[in-house]
Length: 374
Image 1 (tube, helix red, strand yellow):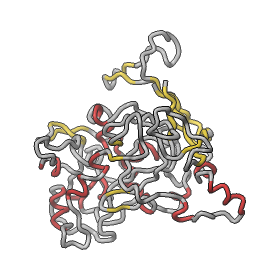
Image 2 (cartoon, rainbow, N blue to C red):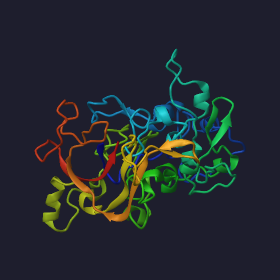
Image 3 (tube, one colour):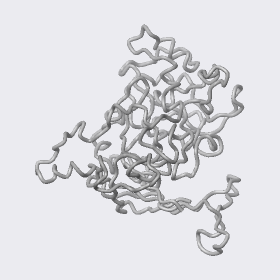
Image 4 (cartoon, helix red, strand yellow):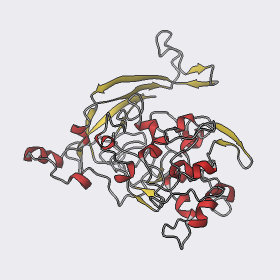
């Protein structure tokens, strides 16, 4: 059984990217996918975009290089080939049968033509600009568009190039809602999986009731800044390791400074503690997930795992969710280095797999939500 530690609570992988803010797109007469967008957002545009930007982004590739992730598992990191500790799966295997493909901006896995190393034209044409840029979007293919539909409602539909895909809203109505700043609601279409409920993944939802930034009306991209369809994110996370702008740090000090408190002794803690350690004192969510067969257990909720779900036709794990929103996290020294099993390490490239300590260079105390998974 693995014990994985998920941190940081406020880490996001927000979605691509900013259109010309404040310019309505009601002039669009038809929408045919990326070709419609690129007919205006070309090299001579005030807001130029190339298809290569999108293809080379994490939101298309579902992976990136991350120097903080070492043995075992050094190399590319992200949803594509690294198991999400919570779900026990990855997109390479579960793109269609689980939820991994629901948030991908392409129609299928991002593997290029093996002869040329370039994407197929059908893959380029299949990129979904509107899932991020449209203020109103129809996730579940019921003809109703809103700003609050989420990827968990997405459905499978037929497609002439790929046989079957997760539904994309390519309607003229959705395209005409493009043009404004990307709002938090647009990011949460997909990231609600981890940040919109106390009962799942992060356990610290981005809602006005639970997050001071949401209460202040801030949007994800106010902190997670964007360059050429690539997003900045924090470096101190243990799972889902994609990191495409490592030179841009997302940190509380970017806005609040290194001495945000009026009391000097509190500022002294900044040298050894992450801000979240004090400022996010509670969390909830999944705390135990059992995948391995439990043939020896005949009674109780963990008997006869995996459990056959007659409704879905799949075998599923036993999941125990901590519903109490005021469960305290655990606290560990952490310098950002981690194994692909989501375990903090003092040195990700040493074979000792030693945990960090207060003597590890670059360490700070950080809060984690525990998950037993195996």
